[in-house]
Image (cartoon, rainbow over all chains, first blue to last red):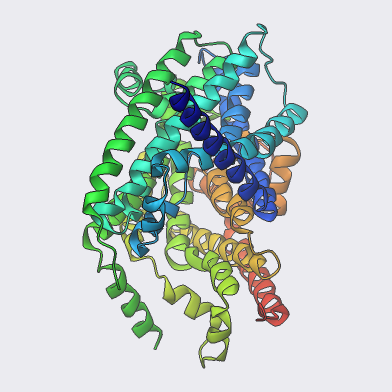
Length: 269
Length: 261
């Protein structure tokens, strides 16, 4: 028993060390952070004006302040949950560098998740906080009324990051079969923009389409769910739904990774 | 020579066949999804900034067509930062060819052919749907406006990419003006207000890509009380943008000091 808990402790320490390393790694890209922050703010202004024009003339289920908050929070979530992702793992599969990941004592899904959580932590401090502050300076934002919304939102963003991570992991892992994962990545980009609730609140879509997205896909749980929680439109039960999807997607990512291991042919000698 | 470079790029990209096919389909879907996003707003609201859907869609499709053409030709200028970081730009500079054409030919995005075609189709739909009262002037404008838009966005791509000479990790910064500019021009200018509208619409000139030509095609007076002739200004604005971009580019190349090793 003691042996087992000691092993759990080692695992925990490894995980947190990887999280810290991820944080440090992404915090070194200072220029990129500033550039990204600038772009998030530009798009925040753009989308805020457009969506306020919609909310000002039609019944959307959002009042103007909720709509502004939805825009700026969703804008801040892009780099926090890592919505668009990168092709690091896919590139490593193509070049064969992924062998080094497979030789480590930590499964690749776990080590990449830890690094990604570190990245998300840095993203939350810079690229979430930045646009939200900019939005608050230029627009009238909705502040959550219930104190419990704040911790709930934090948990929701964490789970959204895990779901987003697992989806991106799957997109990258397609390189085990395709070698070049650019096509799947593009498909992911399109879906992540339009179907997560980033371009517009999903309630703008026809009812059956919206229901299908919520029940059958991980997308709404990445952006729409956290923003619904912060503007207090959605029930706290959304977090439970996110928990289910996070577990499901991680399990799928783990399964695909194990299948990919057997597919892997390292190119060159 | 450039044709050969472009052809080599095509052969290279077509090697990963399945991925290339998905790429072609995916990039063309992108246009549709962007335009559908505009339509989704009209599912909820009857008008945006005082413009009904058929008028707003004309502006959005005009912007999308201009942008697709520019992205097709010049969208890969942001590879400049990669070439600077790896020192490959030095190799390009010593070749007896222009650096900018080499850069464009090297990663020529064939997978975006579908995008241009689809944006063109959307523009035709936008034109027919908007009940334009045609006359020779408007026919000319309908042809010139997307080309001027393409030149304008192309200038944005080049100017934005050039920033990499001073600021390596500038891709996202440039995106704010290129993709941001596309989204800005997809909606009537009346949607925006304040400093943001003045800066993006007038100072940077995005108002002249789709909004003012759109008004002229529709024969609608400007709700912002701009004079009528503004609708015909887009080629001039595009030319100015191109001149500015080429000046920035030349300044950047001259400024370039290599990465050193």
